[in-house]
Length: 312
Picture (spheres, rainbow, N blue to C red):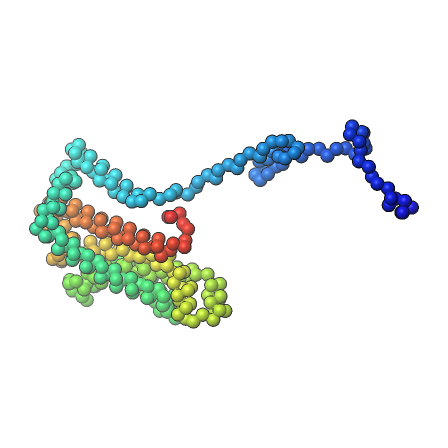
């Protein structure tokens, strides 16, 4: 029986012949993700598959060179227009033209350059000492339990105490000279550097540390390959805040028994109601703050070029 069945061949049905098996229907629309109907394509329908929709951009878009100057330029334009229209009283707020003329006069007699150089020296020294101290404390507290127990508590207490509240004590200890001014600036910078660098250090994934231990990395290579890349984002955040803190501290200390600097120049102008000189000092502070922040941003983009963030 089996041999007889083996020799048989199944013939395909002739065209138009009636068979017992129903024909396979053409595939209907297939439901895709999110319930969207997808039209079939191929030999059954002859329809072309629709082109894929372009993804909607949700990010902030591509950056424009020098785009950050748009906001300050708009602010100056509004100031200029309000001054030209007579909305601003020149005795209270001088116009841009008067401020530019005053800046030219101050530069002609050398007062502006001398005060600017002294202010830059104070801010630079305070920033340098603050960055070194804050980073060293963060590394000590972030990589050692003993260091954390000894360092973190006092710095958290200092974080809660404003630097201005320590001025009387610092004046008592250090006097009213340059040492006190640089110390006030450095304290504000050091706290910002410590908080952000320490937070970045302690947020490094412990699996990276375990991998370094398995690979047998030395202490120096561990610091260079794991700790340094992991702490750089927090370091730059702290550096930006530290630069801002340096300029804020400079403004304060230069108005306390100072005999030079931009703050001293502004304080003297206040005595004679010279609003144009005061605005020149404020513009100088603003230019230095904006330029230093832009410089830190540029260094950050170069150092962290491996990251892809919304900042670009």
